[in-house]
Amino acid sequence: MPSSHVSISPRALLTAALLLATAAVLAGAERPAAAQQLEPVETPFAPPPPIVSVLRSLRPTVMVAFRGEYGPIRASGTLTQAPDAGLVVLDARGQERQIAWSELRELSVVRTPREGMRVGSFSISLASDEGALPRTTRALSLDPGAGGGGGAYAAGAAISRFARPWRAQELPPGEVVLEGQPYGRMAIPIQQVEEWTAQPLRGSVTTMPEGQIQIEVANRVMVSVPLPSLETMRRDPMREFISVTLSDGQMFSGMLRALPDVQLPIAVTAAETVQVPLAEVVQLDISRVPLGLGGELPLLE
Figure 1 (spheres, rainbow, N blue to C red):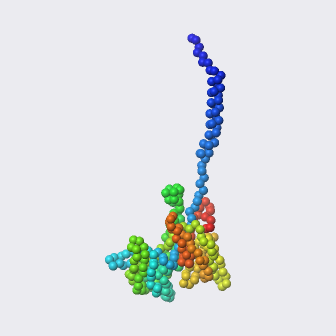
Figure 2: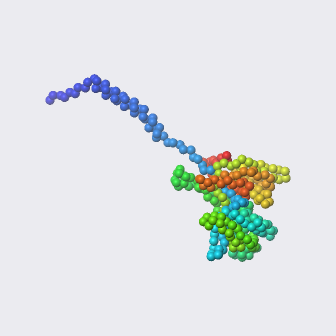
Figure 3: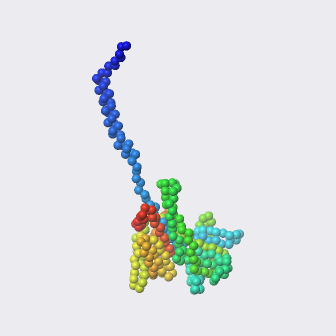
């Protein structure tokens, strides 16, 4: 059988060799780019800003339950008007003190008699009382939509029941005025009030203003506390008493001698920031989030 023979010209062989070499060069140039695209991209973890909670002495937000003309009513709003006479309360020793309505943290009618308190009297706590502002806690949310990054910190208030060291035998005549939604403006007869709760203002703060709080902790012993180092603050404006804790664990209590004339920028929503004068703050709590990797957030800038 005659053998078949294919003849390939030198020119064709040279063209094939050039094509193979060109393909090898192009493949080698593309490999680093492809490999670079496959490398994991490290995204630095950005912890959320600290959460701040404050109780205010002027125009606080309150929830009031009272006996309405047609039945019980519970309304929330800003306290815009109250009698100048205030409210006379008694401490555990029976000593009287007159307070402004804006100083109230909680008030509730006594429905079961107990020592020193008859049915129909009122148990009371003040915004300046220790424990009136529960510490804020943080919890890690794994909801991918909670912040758009597959994990975000959500702020929540720790539930803490605290003692109500004050009482009132009865409420004075007059009325308080709230402004809020959906009612607009509401005048509430004081003697129909059964419950009262001042609600803390909560939000985030990324930058604390500069300034120092001057506290006399002993005779001629002054302490200057920088605002960015604050963790908690509690003060009694009537008695000029103040107690603070710092982010490093230190704590000081004494007479307030100087308070910076500054405002706290509190972001209550992504689109709204409220400027709160420090002079109106009765209690302050700042919660910094631990990173969970053996470290903590740095101090506020």
